[in-house]
Image 1 (cartoon, rainbow, N blue to C red):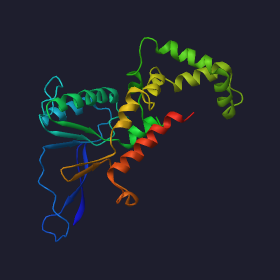
Image 2 (image 1 turned 60 degrees about the vertical axis):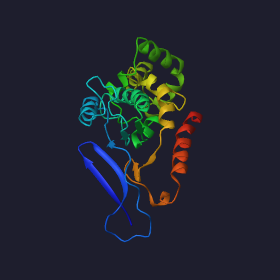
Image 3 (image 1 turned 90 degrees about the horizontal axis):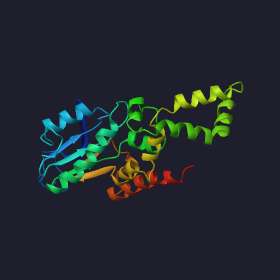
Image 4 (image 1 turned 120 degrees about the vertical axis):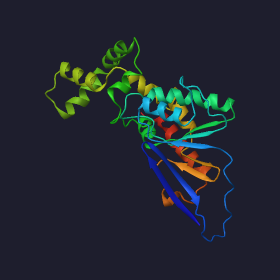
Length: 245
């Protein structure tokens, strides 16, 4: 008999389907786990907490280098938003995926709803500090040039809400809504951008030693859909953003 066990401790979150001991079942029991598995979720841009957890779990040393050996580490989604350091955590996870593989371990990073939101342009939870992490020495020039190149269209959009807005007011409003790093963030999170490609390549669900990991839960409509097909559909939906205007 299968049941759902949800475990949350601090920012730890993992969704698992486990065989319940002592219950009659005609289904074969899953084999004993062959890996040490560590699961963490909902880091939300808190780099200090992420590093503290990773060190406490023996995944990394004081310099952030992989020390987990053959451990399977599962990040169950929502690395970004709310906090200031989503990009730093992403870069850590990308590097650790390579380092863990060399040590016969594995880092599995699942797609959470906040990764999907960033890829689809829903940026309501992206902090100014998080945008700033994407900025470089050319960011201000890029902002100014982008505004001038789209000035007529932007003025038309803003004046639909307030016909009395002057050109100066429109520009000020757009610059306030587009802080340094915001345009670079948009490029990075496109499906063909460095982070977008990484997110599209990550699974939404993963089955490891009989345990099913995903962000949150799974709709009954997908309960009988093969995992590979679920992951294919999620990847296709995110990749389709490349064709969006």
